[in-house]
Every structure is written in structure tokens, then in C-alpha cells.
Image 1: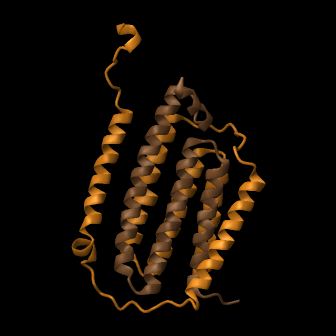
Image 2 (image 1 turned 60 degrees about the horizontal axis):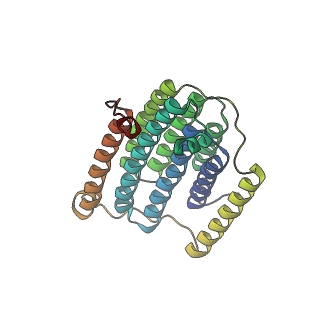
Image 3 (image 1 turned 60 degrees about the vertical axis):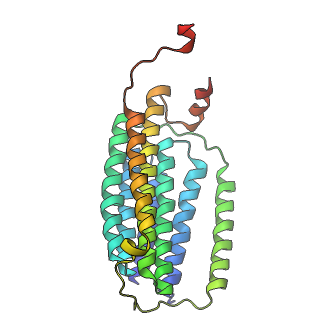
Length: 103
Length: 162
């Protein structure tokens, strides 16, 4: 079976985003949540590059993918800092421990 | 064939990053996923993004993860998931299948076009607003981390004052 390259990349993108969403749904660990977001964004970056390749506008796709990577890194930094602070404050990385913050 | 191998490697590494019990192992598998994504990006004709993904995704973010896990400590107690796993898998498979169907129907025949657009100044001339946004994002991220990690002065509670 000889699949076309865009189809292979497209399936990879969808599976990568699906794995990230699955982790986001089942996990309660804050650091795992950041890892899941990273996986989803890697799929988004690949999707940008694939779309740029297919439409012949690779430079535009690269600049947009760069923006996505920068924003994703900032999200990871802030998310990890939040996780560290919550761990120090509540003693756990469990998402459910966040409900104790309202008290 | 190369694309199939890289795609399979990406998915295996991502699955291992999700399923690993130890957070440090998850971070390591995530770094490997990032490196393979960079390789696929390079093969698709975007070397700049490949380099940035490799240095930022596989380098900087991994260092940040290790740093955060070192401070927070490993929390390897298995937690019961909020959503039942069959429901999560079913909904994701359904959404992914629907997305694949819609994309394939909209795209028609999929084919790679040759790279004929040699413009390299698109980032600096046409999309300068993106650069401004990125600078603002970086500064806001730095300020956010400083605000979160700094041991601020102890401010007395309102109840204590009254």
C-alpha cells in the first residue's frame, strides 16, 4: 500500500492531537496536562507546515508556525510555574486540589 | 516509507509520554517526539521551523520540565481519571474520524506542490505584527513566571489588620 505523503502526515497530525486530547481528558496531574498541551501544539505546527506545503505558501506557514511555537512555549513556562506553586501550596499536583483554593 | 517510519515514531513516543508513570520519563519521551516532529518538518520543506522546534521544543521546554519536576517532585500515585477512559477514547476516535473525512472531502486529491515561492522576508515585512505579538508574549511570560515564582513580601491579611 503506497499512501501519499500528505495523507501520512495528516494521519500523524490527527493521531498526535488525539493522543494529546486523550491525555488531557484522563489525567489529573498538572504537569501531564502541560505535556498534553505540548503534544496538541506539535500537531498544530505540523498541520501549518503541511498546509503551507500543499498550497505553496510555505513562508507564510513558517511564520505562523513560529508564532504558535512561541505562544506554546510561554504557555508551558507559565503552566509549569503554576504547577510548581500549586504543589508547594497544596502538596499535590492533582487538579482536584485546586478546588481547595477557593476556601 | 521514511514518512511512515517517522510518523509511527512520533505516535509511539507521544503514547509513551502519555502512559509513562514517572514524569521525568514523560518529559524525555516528549523531547523525542519533538525531535521527530522537527525531522518531519524538515522533510516537508521548512528547515527554519525544524531548527526552532528542535532547539525550543526538544531543548528549552525539556529543560523547563526537568526543572519543574525537580522542584515539584515526582507525583507517581495513579489518579482516577475524571472522564471514563472508554468515553474519552470513543469521543476522540469519533472526532478524529470526522475531521479526517471532512479534510479529505474538502481537499480532494492530495498532492504536494513544488516549492516555487522563494520569498524569505515574509516574517520581517508582511507579518511584523506577529513579531510584535511574540515579543509581548515573551515579556508577559517572563513577568508571569517572575510573579509566580518570586517569594513576595509577606502582606498581612485583611482580617489581621482589622
